[in-house]
Length: 114
Image 1 (cartoon, helix red, strand yellow):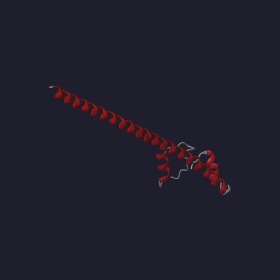
Image 2: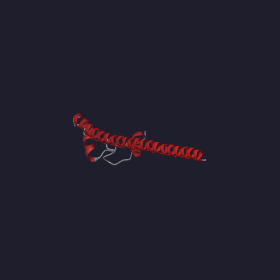
Image 3: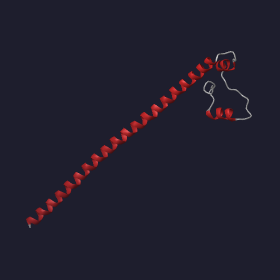
Image 4: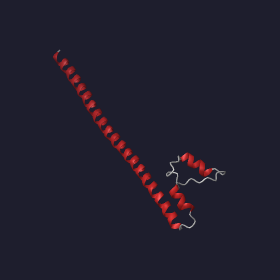
């Protein structure tokens, strides 16, 4: 519960939580009072957990939104780039076609002048 309160890394938390030999608890002072107080009503413990989950869920949602927005921006940029490339290709094709028609017309004129 207090991994973030105590600024524990995920790896360290996993080691503490998964070790069968560990009898350590890792609560910050504020949470320790609530958790270890056997007289405290379970509602206060639940409220503490709810607050922790809500805070982390909000952070998680924000991270997801940031990643989704970045992904959408990249897609829009890629779509725009493909559109520009398509237009450039059409212009190049028109230019080549124009040059070919000029060359054909020039050859036809040369044939008629002789």
